Length: 467
Image (tube, rainbow, N blue to C red; front, side):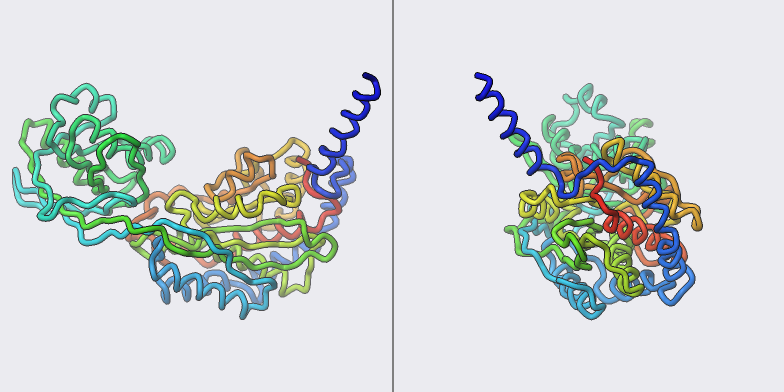
C-alpha cells in the first residue's frame, strides 16, 4: 500500500509539473519587484517613442487609413474579408514576424432593407437597426398595434395583451451589463406571449435619435420573430402615447436573413521570443465590427494599439525572452466566435500562455488595467504598472474582461484588459456614430505606450506570471 501511494504521489507530481508553465519558480516578491524596476529605462524609451517621438500619432493614422479605406466589417461580409487582407499586408510590410492567418468559421447575417413607419396616431418614420441573427418580416412587412412595456416583469403582467402585437421595450438604461438583456433576449420573451415582432430601446445612456444595433439570441423552442432597436427618443415617445391611452400602429419591414457560416480568419503577428519562443504574451482586439459607422472605436482602436505595441518594441530593437503575439479576432460581435475557435485550437499549449490581453472598451485616455490572476501575479503586475508613472497610468483594478480572452482567464491564465476614461463609450457603441471622429490621437498614443510597456516587460521577465 505504501509503495502504491508513493507511486501515486510521484505520478501526481509529474502531472502537476507538466501543467505548470515552464520556469514557474515562485521567485520572492522582493526579488521580482527589483527585477521589474530595472525596466524603468526601457519603459521610458517606449513611452517617449509612442507619445513624443517618431511614432507619435502613428496608431491613430494607421487606424484612420484602415477605417477610411475599408469601412465597417460585419462578420461574414466582403468588407471583413477585405479588412483581413488589408491588415495581413500591413503587418507584413511593417516587418513583424510570423504574420499569418488562422482559419475559422463565422456567422453570416445580412441586414437587408429595413424600415419602421408609425401609421397611427400619425405618420412618422422611426430610425431602426435590425439586430444580428434576427429573422426578416414576411413579404409586405408586418402591420400591427403596439404594446409598450418598461420591463420583462410588466410584459409578464400584461401577457394577455401581447398576442398579435409588436412589443416595444422602453426599459431605462441602468448599466450596459444590466440593460443589454433586453436586446439579447427581448425577442424571445415577446414571442413567448404571442407578439409578432419586438422593438427595443437602444442600449445607451445618451442619444441624438441614433439607434444602436447588436447581436441577439433566440431561445430554443420559442417562435423566432423579427427584432430591431429603435432610438431612445422614439421609445419614450411611444411610452408617453401609450400612457395617454393612444392607440399606436406600426408597419415594420425587415429583409434580414442568416446565410450559412462562412470562412474567415484570425490575423496573427509576432515578435518571436529570444529564450522561450513557445511561451506567449498575447495582445488583442477584434477586427470585425457592426455594419454601421466605421468600427473605429469598437474595436478599431484595440486593433490599432495591439499592432502598435509590437511596432514600438520592434522599432527600439527590443526582443523579449517570450513571444509577443498580436491576434486580431474575427466575429467577436457575433459572440466571440473567432476567439472561441482560437482557444480550441491552442488550449493544448495553455501552460505556455503567460498573459492574455484585450482592448475592447475604447482607446480613450488610459486609466490603468483590469486584471484577473493569482495574488502573486497581481503583486507582480502592480510593480509593472509603476513603470507607467511618467504618464500617470498606474492603476491595477479587479476583473480583467473581454469576450475574446474570457475562456483563457476561466482556465487560469492571467488576463488584462485596458481601462480607459470610457464614460462616452456607449454613446457611440454599435451605432452610425462609431467613426474616426470619436478617436483622439494623443489618447491613442498613451494607450499604445501602456499596451507596449506591459506586454514587453511581462514577456521579458525571468519567470512567467504565477498561476
